[in-house]
Image (cartoon, rainbow, N blue to C red; front, top):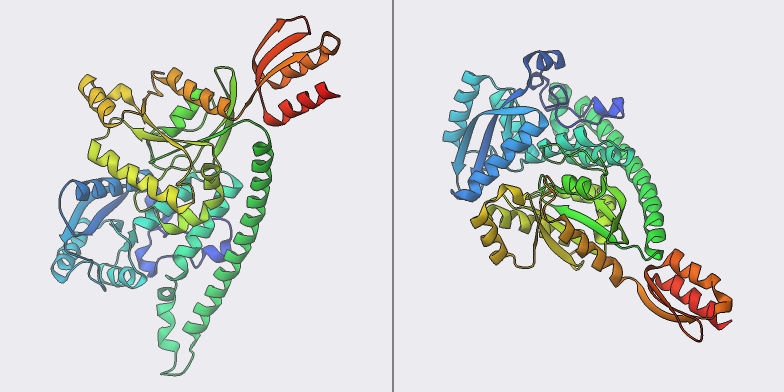
Length: 450
């Protein structure tokens, strides 16, 4: 991982960072050793209730998450059972197999496909003497690497602290021998409570700062909503090509590497679509079982989606249908969680250049209302621009006015505020037809009456 052998850590407050470590100091690797050895070597463990394509997708997705975080998978151990073992995640036999594998491969970390309770994580680290992380910790690490704006860093730090708060009690096991018996409070517990108070105070400060940022963002949104410029949000599964599509449409220059969660900070750009102006926003990508604390931490950012006039749901046309359907369900789940389920939505199948003729035909039958586009080649972008233009026109008021020749200055006002302006001369004056923002149309009509 990119943090030098520690679990998710706070990157802005050294006093807090010192307590955001794994449970056992021996599980951490010196940063100099990690730099020298290159990517960390990870063994993946999973407790799955069934076999098949869904299980394969979940394991492949964790492998991609680890690659993005800076690790490579060297082996995998999977146990099929209805639910993970409450204390050790894996059953006794599989845990013995894992211990033997760890002794042989000496990996840098063990990565669980699911979520680990603090107790499960402590037990595994005690048994394996190796750092253990779960899927949430890996995603948090990626978010910490990719957060670039001040707001994004605050959001990630808060999510890290919320995740690690319950995982601190094992940090002070070396002091347990100093404590008294039942009913006493030894130094170990005192230190733990002190650290928890430090983390609680830091979380409270972060929430206050994020509320201030959210108020500022809300003010900006209110200003935009006053205008007739529609707000379009790009949403979709991570790595579906949202940022590439944003760049192709607007030339925004958003980073669009082939990694998960490359874009965390929202980017909004103005775009001319068939003469109509729209605001296009790129937001953080979604993923199956996106940790709740991340959805909460990024709620202000994701409001760009909730306040949009139209959500362009970007999906990967090159993915198998079952996988794309599962990803679409994940996107719908997050949209529902942030209160954007009722926002008008259009499916955009990106990367269509990677699909052959038969696949394109099948996609047309399965998703008849979807747009097939390619951010890489530009195919289908004209059709997407027409959709954006229709959305913009829907917010405008059509006007049909006869402006007396003595009031020709009002014609200039129509041209300045409106679009698709047409004019012709009549006996009474100049007849002007146009699409105008409602407020501008009302001002022009009022000026004619005075």
